Length: 78
Image 1 (tube, helix red, strand yellow):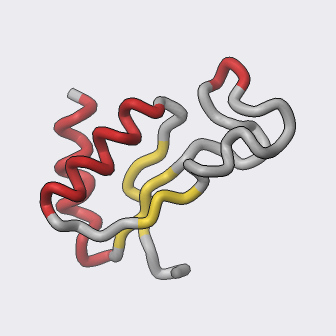
Image 2 (spheres, rainbow, N blue to C red):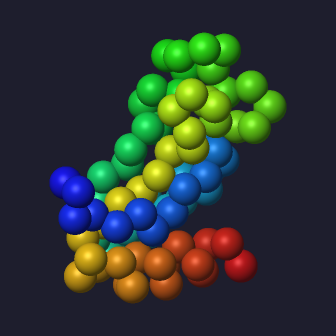
Image 3 (cartoon, rainbow, N blue to C red):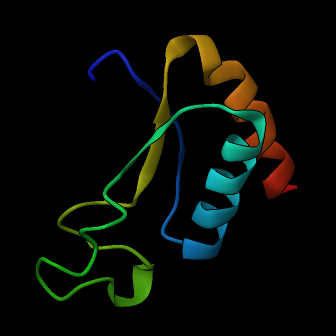
């Protein structure tokens, strides 16, 4: 799993969901790290939108898919 590349991270759950949907739509396999543990430690998400202990959720893909995944996600942020 250490060979995966982070292509997106955000405390915004809506953007995270859109990013996952975009990758699913293109058949790009990914791992979403930290999205399920945001409320388990400390005081949860606070005002930042993510847990300061675990950091923001991030999406990681294989190096072969990284460029295409970044392109898809960049379209969401425009």
